[in-house]
Image: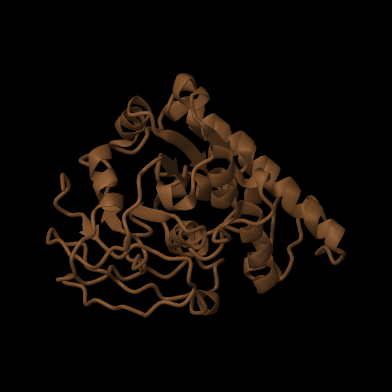
Length: 326
């Protein structure tokens, strides 16, 4: 393979039961700093602990099931096309400050606007997909906040929906401002791989859990309007009822592309996206980020630090070739 740090793993199936595999890491996993004081340590302990996996230059071969033909290449957006975690976190915290959102979990914290720390947000985004579900989960755990939107914590569900919608709308606009600033670049290799797929006659899609307006803005600014308009399918979180790890967005893409799930290959960056792809019956390669590098990607067929050395022919071989178990 072109990328020496690629790890080839078993091809996923539709079965929800799989044997749990483990591997010992040759390097020590990074120790997490304490989260922002406004983010509670006790809650972090409830998060799933993702097993550290060795990402050394040596290849690891396991068995791959019957071959498939690569007909469609499907990209996630945040984390795959661009490194966006820190940008989203900044936009959320700006929204919390703008509306003076204060959670009642402690008297000291209630005096300051909510602020999601770096380590907390890394784990939050890897547990809950989509912006609105993130806030609903957080407020459900820590208590619904007071703010300039509601002077008292909202109790009726319609008020809670209004609170989250208002925060999300403002956050989305703030995120757009950051993207339009001209300081954000696509991740290495993404544009070349998209162009190779198009030139080879493959279907090309982008499926993101983010809001449609923010994804459109990202794509137009990062991959260019011409590439965006040439996509065979584009789906955002607004287009499906359930967010990742539910497979709905990838099943919908398969249907619109007119391509069987087994002939689609998904590029994701997190275990949430990986689960969505595999539950849809699609193979998935991972290009991890700094916040997802230690996750358990046992169901991915390959893992890359980025796409800079990856070629379309490499992906075709991953689906076509049965790799003997070592």
